[in-house]
Length: 267
Image (cartoon, rainbow, N blue to C red; front, side, top):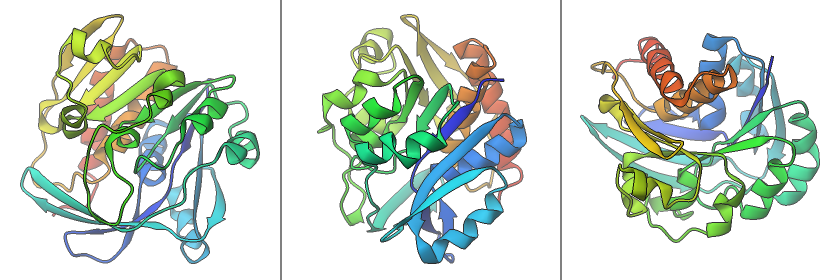
């Protein structure tokens, strides 16, 4: 069976004033991977004092030490969310992608780069990860400024970052920051063959083969949405690996995340 690799920094998140908990693409991807039971590996790096907590992920994890773990404060107010960066993480280097990280991803047909800020995956790192496999990229790698304080978005990304990307996942606010719309011409201007835009309670828009299609979902009430985008993207790629069409994969990913959100802590 085809195999997925997920690469990203684990974060320490304080959600709605609670105690710090592990977050980031590795954590929420792991929840989707456990549900779907697809062969996969997660690669991450974080401060040594936080590494013992990775055992709870329940999927194969390859981890390396970092000087610090990236930290966020997240506040939910109905449909509105505010984020602050407390501590910056360490970018993924081309040398890591060619070395221990490349070894960890051996045998993976796809790798998902679960960025938390624009600093995480430089173009050279993504190019190294793309050798022999397809790459998906979280749009946070394009618009999130890597600076401590209230999270700020802009479109000042390096265009080279997208040259080796096969799938781009965006949230609605990231799409807005890029100055794009939910139509074929605007999404095509990004230069990526397949683009998915998650819209929260409204589902997702999938752009592939030159066409954009809205895929609705059934919203859940009173759940913490933190990490839903990471879980959705992981599920979407898993279903694409199983040779579902983009629209079919989006429908199934909607269902998978609805199931997962029903198990997550209620606010």
